[in-house]
Length: 138
Image 1 (cartoon, one colour):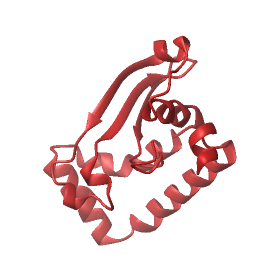
Image 2: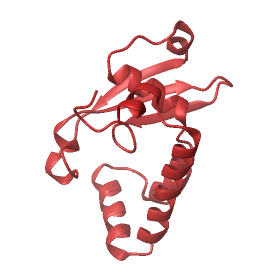
Image 3: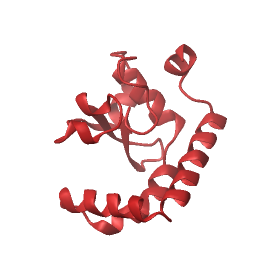
């Protein structure tokens, strides 16, 4: 865990994480309970239900650099001036119904980073919500 916190995930770890998330989505999306929970959640938060089918696109955008930056910010570490210039916003999201969020995640804010890649593509990454460090380790 210390290596992951200090260095971030390797390219192979990112590939493995994406494969796991995509496999889980493929399996779960065939289950009525999963589909209903996605639709109900989107309805409750006034979101477009069609977004539920875009989770694979989101999973495929996860990258090691974004996770390393998020981990550094999460731990209160300084990031380079170049990295700071590429960070457009940092949000803290609190859950309206913490009891509905698995584990300890619901009681703590989830941080979301909005930034640009070096080739100026916009990225939005939830830290500690999908594959970031577990709460309390930062």
